[in-house]
Amino acid sequence: MPKKRLLATILLAAAFIALTTNATAYSIGTAPGVLDLGEIERGQSKEFEFYLITTADHDVIVGLSPIKVHEGFFRQNATVGAYNFTPSEASQLDPGNWLTIRRDPVIVSPKNSFILHLADGSVVKANAKAELEIKVPDDAEPCYYAGSVNLIPQEIPGQGIGVQTIGVTRFMYVFRVPGNGYRKGEITDIQAEREAQDKVRIDMVFKNTGTCTLIPWADQAEIFNNLDNLASTTYSGPTIVKPREVAILSTYWVDTKKDIESGIYRVVARVEYITDYAYREQTVNVPKIISAPRIRPTAQGCYFPWWILLVLIGLFLIVYAVGALQLAYTALLAFIICGLFTVVGLFVCPNDIPVRWILIELIVILIVVYWKT
Image (tube, rainbow, N blue to C red; front, side, top):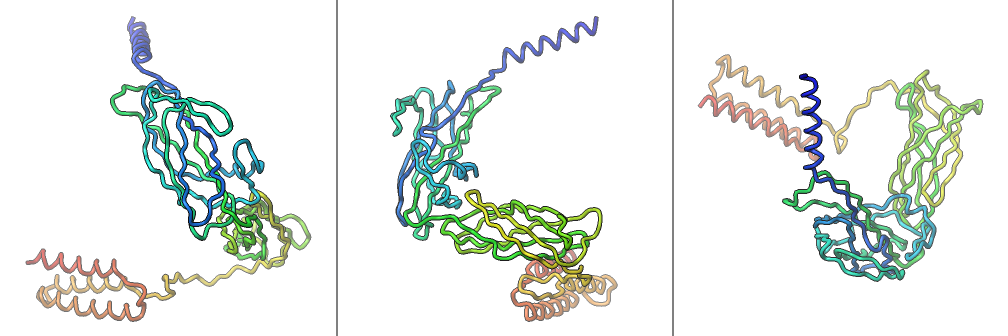
C-alpha cells in the first residue's frame, strides 16, 4: 500500500508540474540575413539598419553585440545572392571595432509588426529595427570585410514565462574598401629548437606578402629522418598576421616512447590561410639538449633580490622581541637600512620598481608600531 501511495504521489506531482509549467519555443531572426554596404572610402562613415523578426507571442528584450563572422564565410563563392564578397580579396580583420550600435538593447514585440520590402524583392513582416553606424579608419586595408552582430534575447521580468527554447540567427554585413586587395603569404624559414629530450619545437616563419590580414595555421609539418622515413606530423594553431608582418607558427614534435635524436631532419611544411596555402621544404638541425639551467630575467633583463627585504624585517622583529633595542630605535633602524637597500635596488634595476616589496616593508613595520603603541 505505501508503494502505491508513493507512486500515485509522484504521478500527481508530475501532472501538476506539466500543467503549471509554461513551456515556450520561439525564434528571433534578422532581415536581411546579410546586408551589403557597398564600398566605403577610408575615413568615411556609413549608417545602416537591419530588422528583427520573432515568432514569440510576448515582448522580448534583445541585446546587440559585435562578433566575428565564422571562418566558413570566407570559403563561400565570390557572389552569393544579394551581396558581393570575394574571399580571395578579403581581410580577416574584424570590423566590429569600427561599429557603433545606436540603440542597445531593443524591444522586439509581436504587437509592433510591419511589412518590409527587401532589396532582393522579398517581403517579410518585421517586429523591430536596429540602427548602426560603421566608421572606416584612415589606414584600413583595401579589401572586402565581413562582420556580424550577435542577438542576445532576454525575457522581460514579470511575464511569467517558464521553460523556453529560443532559436537565434545572427546578422551579418559586408563591405569593401576600394583598392588593390589580395591575400598572399609565404614560409620564409623553418627552424628547430629542442625543449626536452623527447620534445622539439618546429618554428615556421610566415610572412604576409599580400594587402589583407590573414589568419594562417600550419595544416601539417611532416618531419623525415636521415633515412627519409616519416618521424612525425605536427600541426599549429591559428594566428593573426597583418600585411607585411611576420609571425612564427610553432608546432611541437613529442616522442613519448624514446628520446629524439639530434641531427639533420627534413621538414615539409604546409601553411593554410583559407583561400590558399604556402609550401616549403627545408632541412633543420635538431640540437643536443642543453643541460645548463635557464635564468629567468626580469622585463628589462636585470635581477635584484628584493626578497631580502623580508629577511631584514624579520631580523628587526627578532631584535625587538629579545629586547635588544627599544621599539622606536628598532623601527628607525629598520627604515634606514631597508630604505638604503631599496635605493641600491632601484639603482641596479631602475626599470623594475619593487612596489609590492616596499608596501610589504611599510605595512609590517607600521603594524608592529601600531600594535605596541
